[in-house]
Image (tube, rainbow, N blue to C red):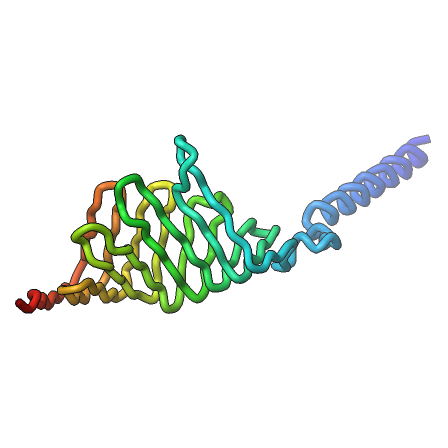
Length: 191
């Protein structure tokens, strides 16, 4: 009987050891790859020649976005833009147009990053002449009416030429802050 008990105990121990080994093998093995395409960076939709508008509380446009192509990626919920054109509006102020060759909008839609030949144009209004700003990169926060860059910028209006590195534009406060290496050339009106 003791011989039988010893054999059964050894067999039970080996069965438990085998079960533990199988369980550990499953725990440490990577999960099987998903076959639904969710892990690939492939678009789930593409829209060409589109435009969209965000309205303020009074029902007036706050900003608009148009692009020749918009591509959305479901794996990281980002949106790529080809030739985006933002327009920002405010009561009693000239609109701002912002153009670029390409852009990127974050998952929550709160930030837009514009790249390559970025140009901001403030339309002329009243005594204020048209103002242009050129840079290679611009970070937009449209809901806050803020634009930022740490890249070189060139700003021109009817009488002023400015170069700088970096800027913060706060449209609500009518504030343009140049961050470094600022050079200004002012040309007064000829009489």
